[in-house]
Length: 314
Image (cartoon, rainbow, N blue to C red):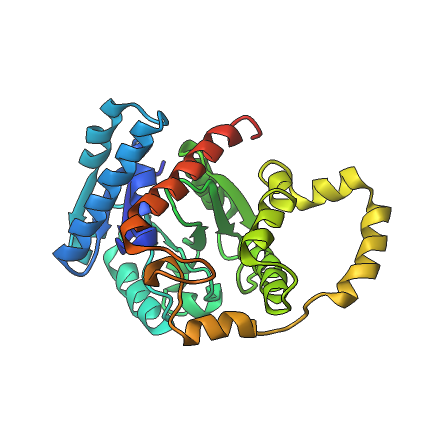
């Protein structure tokens, strides 16, 4: 049984992964290359746990035990020495991943399952760093940001791993309330990111062509398709609407829609201007510096409310 978790990387994804496991009773070792990164991670976890208390998602008495279950270290060997499941959340650079995975293979116990949180690198490109024995205990476990709130985790099942080991990992994720997606083929972006990019491509195209203002385009998505998608998948939506109708509409619309194979010019122009979104104060919308903290908090609050509601639909 998996009980001891190692998380490698304490940044945006890593600290949320550690938090989710610790909140649900797992013993977690969290690694990063320096104390500053780890201190920032612990502060973020404390703030996020407090928001969960404020929104009555957890009770206040769960905060201290959750924090106590997270041990931080800048010593990689010490972090993974007795772990059952080790997930790396390092930057998406293949050279970095290969070096890290090779070191984890050497340092981790033979029984440990290694996982990568990659959202863009192929399984095989990373697995070359591992011994044949460890490759049977290696998988992609892709979380969505913020990790402590988003329910989805995509799990690879590409023929390298015995069914029993996969089932053990899936049971672990079930225990922390995650919805797992079993991905059967090693394709770029796995499942959720490919769906998301399909939506984003058309959204950016609508902006580029001046069809509507950004706020109205987001409103159309939030209160149209996304309103249903919060509780109903696309295939179920199609079944309810009638596959004959979807076929006719597809024939009429798809030839008119964006089919580009690279980032939209409107998006690329924003990047060139340094307008990267929340982190720079402006993207498609403006974010005054004095309001950024409140905007982030409200974003998290909406996800917490949605997470509460989603339990009814599982």
